[in-house]
Length: 295
Image 1 (tube, rainbow, N blue to C red):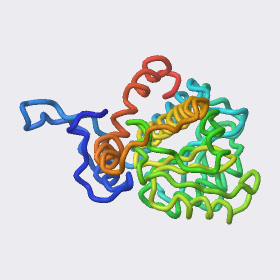
Image 2: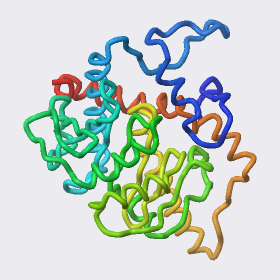
Image 3: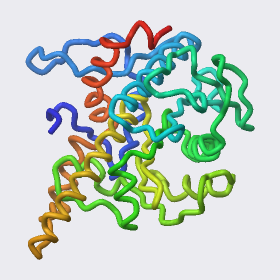
Image 4: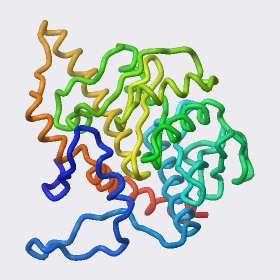
């Protein structure tokens, strides 16, 4: 569980109520007034939008390295997008066909609102499904700075069940009343309406289970989005294991009650908690591949 100081005072059950706070936090970390304890790491802010763009592109490239390291890619499937701070109608995304573990900041491509690649690295191929899904989500949700979708193994398996996640572990409480279920499957998302339908199903929640397809997570930071994906994948894995074990004994899993789930959500399900929880993974990948990521 995240420390108590990560708890949000924001009202509401979804995970986006404090996203704007996260995006306006001062870059300098000041000592906490409580017993001199330093505050938790927060996203930096920038006066120069072009400087912010380069920083965030580095975080996006690092996100792909993390996804690759964790085995979240399936061939050429999967994409993470970053809303461009210079022109918020545009987004940065991975070039189609480039391995996640090889992506550098300079490889990322910039896509406009019409699906045209207008800037980026040498490979400027765009995954049509990436545009259809992410353009719809970014358009419907101005608070979403980053969105991630991939065909991770356990998430993909869980979405074949046509049901939402049970709240059976502390970690799953991060998705209490904050996880949508999209029950349609119409093949690869190559149609604009399909993307809009996914965005509508997502609503104001931070994540969605796309039936027979995979996971979708969003956030006000790249870091939170990546952590929600990692956590949701592991929650799906945990439930698959728990359901199989319980079923084998003719029983059922023990569910967390609504009151306790809601209370736990306030500590581990907020945007601030998501950002901070991603710190170890980002620190590790930058230590291992940082120079190459930022090239």
